[in-house]
Image (tube, rainbow, N blue to C red; front, top):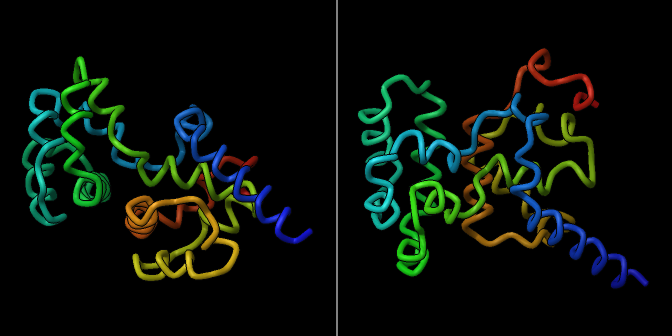
Length: 182
């Protein structure tokens, strides 16, 4: 019986993760961007080169800051950490992209998408996620608990989530819509 419950939970989580892009709805605009949506804006003229490059977060940070000086520090850090974990893309994804929008969409889910897809179905989104302040190691440690270790996320997705969350959480109470507070 217990195994059936765990299997059902895993299936539900898998379905919610697959539907991640569906959760990128306006009701989550209060959350900082996770990186993937910024790709088009920042790298419209050279996203294919970005998609095929391997760099550390510090190198990406310098590049992003130079290309988009109007971004806030947290946005720069979010995009840089996202690229450090998720670039380069496999060559076939890059080759299959017809335009910049398609190439940006070919990137894996970002931290915001992963949080929306995984954090609000088992506990309160605000109390269980949005209000927590942890460093990256603290967010990585979340996946050591039995119920989080079973989430169907790859190592890259967990790292993407941890870095995004360390940079962008907690969100100030007044910035969270009432429907998401408790």
